[in-house]
Image 1 (cartoon, rainbow, N blue to C red):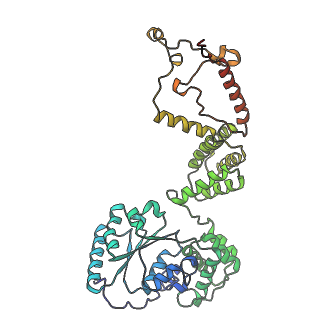
Image 2: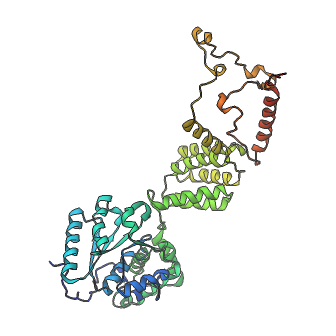
Image 3: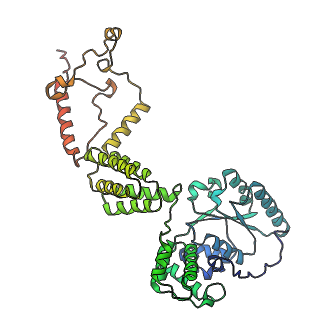
Length: 449
């Protein structure tokens, strides 16, 4: 079969057995609903498509936002050879064959080849590298579609030669428009069945779909079958939906976006946002122990000694979750998240460890002062190990003010600086008093007179 034959393809037929989402896929840019910021008349991407001046692009967005549909619309208007390629089904041999055919086609007829790769993030680096020479030479125009962040999943060399376009989840109004079109279209949709649906039913499907047109049309098709000719209402949709399809991938970008939102909401002392993002993660199927570990980390990193109870509460929530499991454990996590959002904040512990770790890694490793060393043997004692060590509990107020515990190179260095919030106000006063005592008890330099 010649992939680059000059014959015009026959007009697409409607396969009545295909899923409704496939039958209703837009065939032209004018049929598109949503993504106006990219393909409204006059927008640069639309102009490039309609004037057949398209260069390599990456379409990035969640499922059901129109990436594949946009590629097919491009295929319908371009004068270039168009090939659709699946990263799931194709290997390096198929890539090389297509690349060779593209080069020959350009030499033979001067026509470019537009190569659409669905789920390009599933190609490894070596497979992605195979496209580079032909992209650079102009033999192919690459259109890659991905649900993953291209910064992490697409070869940097390939990414630098492509323009990234971000497709957004479809809004509820756009989803409802798509659903009404499917209900009314007698050829590709459900129009021949003369079905009706209440506004509440369509709004319910739009909420369930969560920005995914494919999910919405699949739900509409299910509802049409369940309605058996009766009007589709909100009760029917609620029965079919049960568990809303939440956009989430425990190993992908949305995982990190949501945990980031939870962490930053707690840091900004917003309990309402904190419990919302927590619920988003748990209801979408996140490992609750992962969330518990993040709460424990937050208690030390962002609250620290401003409220030491936060760490106790976070660990208690982890233990309660382990004891009860889910879904009962979700309220323990919510209690901890709300408490930490409301608690006074300090990153002094976090900064203190960071500064101390940097000193430990990058500066000369000073020996432990003799008076702080362990001296379990006679030899070690004869070498002055533990000499002049003073047992703090035997000192006034439990502190040997004139005993230095840092090595000489770090004398008087402050790694921990309490903030003026929560319990750290009192801790700061206490440490300042101790430092004043040490200064007062430090040996004065001898006079040279």
